[in-house]
Length: 146
Ligand code: HEM
Image (cartoon, rainbow, N blue to C red; front, side, top):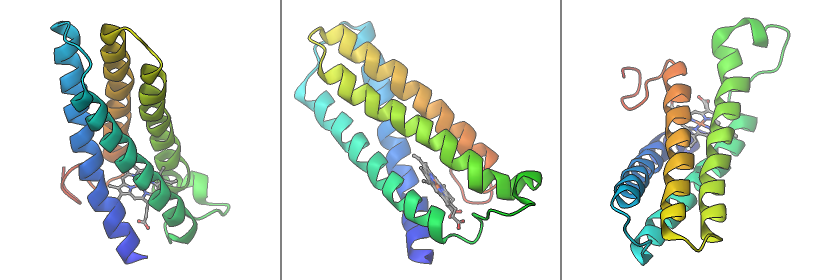
């Protein structure tokens, strides 16, 4: 359980770093009207893999974690509600956006349209994950602080 939580906690940095890299790259290439290269594809793939690994670990944690409880007090208690409902809902939306960014842009033939799709969907996902981690009370980047 603690190993899983540590992995999930650590993997957040991989997801966030890849998200920032992909968002910045796709914006710069969108504005510069640059082609969609193999590097763009590789970065998108790593983001996809880290995100889905995070989802898998999160799903296991959801069933074994002490902070995920379903009882009469869950919705009245902000901490319990966050872990039972808000963390999973917000992050699932972000993961769907990251997944759709890749799967839908892959089918596009126009490189500018690909960059735009990758930028808009992944930027939205990044904002949602920041909001979600901000609400956790455990910090966004530094556990327990910021
Ligand atoms: C990209 C998406 C996600 C990110 C960045 C993320 C990040 C985090 C972080 C930073 C923590 C706190 C870790 C700690 O305090 O050491 C956490 C805890 C947790 N996450 Fe996620 N998470 C994501 C998606 C998910 C999903 C989709 C689920 C459920 C299916 C999930 C389930 C959990 C649970 C249950 C905990 C609390 C574990 C505990 O304290 O016992 N996470 N997550």
